[in-house]
Image (cartoon, rainbow, N blue to C red; front, side, top):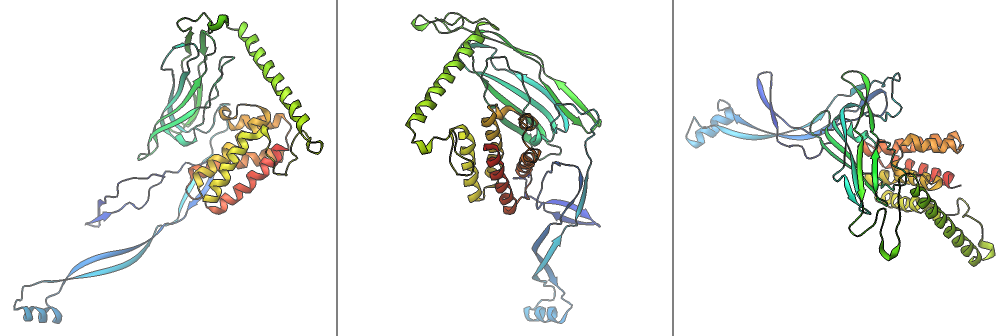
Length: 397
């Protein structure tokens, strides 16, 4: 939807006469599936004001002129004309994208694009955050472009991307830039590299798929002043890091400590609990909140609040995030940086029923459509809310 366009009228010449033309509404539609669609007509009620000259040759005009003592005086009167205007139904045919030659990483981008990868600082002090940006520029259906799949160097912790769109919504097709910004931790010094990233899209002008690549990116993490290579020397402790060797043992040791701490916590919790309350997990459907699904339960709470308020944007955005959270927490995968196909693949590898996978796919599609189409109403939110509760119950079982 395009908001904030100019309300000033244009002037058009029709049948030799000039008319003011007012723009009532302007929207940019991005098709999500092929087929034939009908855009219903829009109806506008208007009160049009006219001013006309009373014919001085008429009896009424002549009488008024005599009373005023003038035969050249012109009398004006205002007229109001109430009219209902309705546009015709518009039929739209959306052609399917060709299946032949479709790249494996194609996610629905259509247009003409270029890609690049940026890093403001390529030499970072140890333990300082590093920022990497994946930038897509050009013209096309920017709202449907998703984050790329990136193979990060082993041992790095990477945040979910911050997404920013800077597009000109007054032109067709949309043109501008979409940026995915990642923040990386730098736990050890050394030289790191990120392989070239690929991005696939369909070019409607040439009616074919294209795959473009960024340049490889290298950066260096250096010790701070007063620190030895690989870490902080404070207190006589130094972490020596050699890429591909010691880091592996460092992470294995950290994981072992976390696992041991989790076991101690569970045993302690089990001993403190009464006998009647010692099941390993809250049975499905009892309404209990389990620690394993904290992020999913938190986002589901925001879904419920948005549903009660009728806040469409927040409702569908949080509903989509809830599905990602519950899959991520169930299988301990980074849900925020996985594509929809990868999340569904995770369910398939766990031999989840086909009906559940189709329900998850339908739910995610409904949420994505609702975020970019203005015609969803409260009935659609009711159906989505019910479907979301069913999916959560099955995934938590």
